[in-house]
Length: 395
Image 1 (tube, helix red, strand yellow):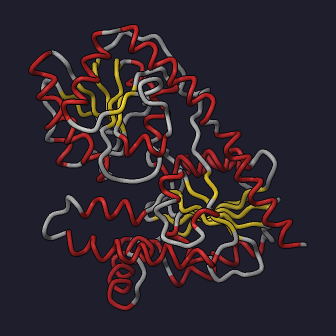
Image 2 (cartoon, one colour):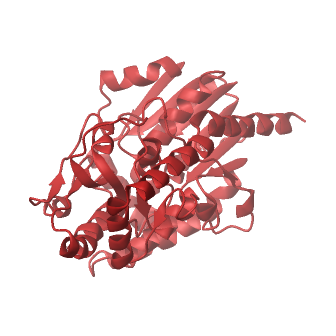
């Protein structure tokens, strides 16, 4: 099958969740299909980044959008359309025909569109079956941000939330099939037929992320793109609300915050007991050097890939009910769950004190992701959706 894939970002490097999902799905799908990749990009895609995708793609088209175009898109979208700004940001009307011609000229059998952000480019194509990967319920993620937004940002976030809900609903009918990352996110899509959306989970590369015996340098670890609001919110909560309780009982405990593009708010968390790294080439080093992984995610949607990676490396994990609702790990067996600072404190101190408990959580977490989060198995389910959709169309 010839599969056309449309993304809102070039899927390398793998510092964002959408890039990670796209990269591994492309790699798996390419084993038995021809992949024609079209990626929208506001950044220059470097030759070495292209080389990472070329082995999996028959052809790659990059649609470059400069910063001025983005600004014009946002202003025009806000004033003259009802598009969510996340959609307006990535939509370049002058390139719509170019995107469509790319897929049509290569006679693709199916179009896979990741995120509603780029659905405007292909929604009008009727003769080629299409799948929309909502991935996350973006509207709910925006709604959660509104709860803690500043007075200045609050009205804009409220407008964006309303537009996202409306768009997530109405774009549904423009696609033949629909996928999303978790049941939790599926239930948040406002549409009468939202239960028809197929769950396609992420995976973890266990050939890459695998346990390694290394002397421990850090007691606690938090990773992620550190300019992403849910990560900023989570790590600030950890440092400002949880760590003071922990330090009252054990002032020696330290934390590593590891990930790309740390915001000024994150950088200010740095101290003699809180290390902020910025971008690192190999995240595995920090997983291996850390005793516990703590992810107090309070806002956002989707699946936390950081938890999959930590569990694959047998690092005991602690997270919130919000994050585990998507993950679906068994509480107190494969992972520990906390929903307030004291509960996080107790979980951290118990795991650090009782090595047998920490080892059990680590092993059970490892077995859980090995069983449930295989890129190969989950992408086969996605490929079957494409195949069945095309066969139904021919009947």
